[in-house]
Image 1 (cartoon, one colour):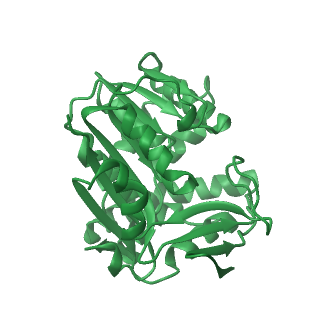
Image 2 (cartoon, rainbow, N blue to C red):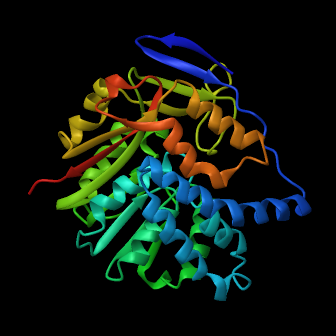
Length: 324
């Protein structure tokens, strides 16, 4: 449930999140069997819509099989299962594809990921044997799970982990050939400071890949749960969740630091409310058909020429290259 309020010129949206729900063990087994049969079928069907990220989806299944020797020793059976049958969901198909296409053929020696979903930086490390990766995440539990997965893939020697905020990272400026931050910046209230820090850490001619939530008109979303455990509640007891950027707020909060992007791509829902209903159902329905995600993306989402065209919410991919 949502309602809009305004503080100055910046609109706020307050959202009540549904309760999480889970399945008993026997039903989880039934769901796993369904996924093993239906996930490949829906992946094939989604090709009719030219959904982004389908090649990465296939790579994930192949990499999932590489975990077989270590799944019991490192307790990675759930990670292997997700890699095989539903490694990405919703707009991640677009976001991963956008960043992947920008970096897959770029020589990278030292790479930093700022709190993206762990799968993308791991995929980049697996695909590029010359790359050394650093993972930053203020969520200690999530970072620990990332370390376990990196260990399972056998690339631990090329990875370093930082349990801190980007503002607290103790690394010299001009250190990284590439930096990614996928669906993170919109969750940081002091977003411009975070962009400035990432920009300072990037080497001359280095690439910064950022994806953020967006809409035709900007607003800040607040939720009734402390999803990340990092922020304090406002006067209504709600927590800042994310900012939806429009073109003007991107220019003010991001481009003022980086300059204009080399590439800006918009991907969003065809009908307003689709993304929110999808996210709510994932939280509340333990039988949600995750295996159907790529096909759902093709039906309900598409590319837009610019942010002003969006009928509802979406995500914008931004590619920057730092000058000499």
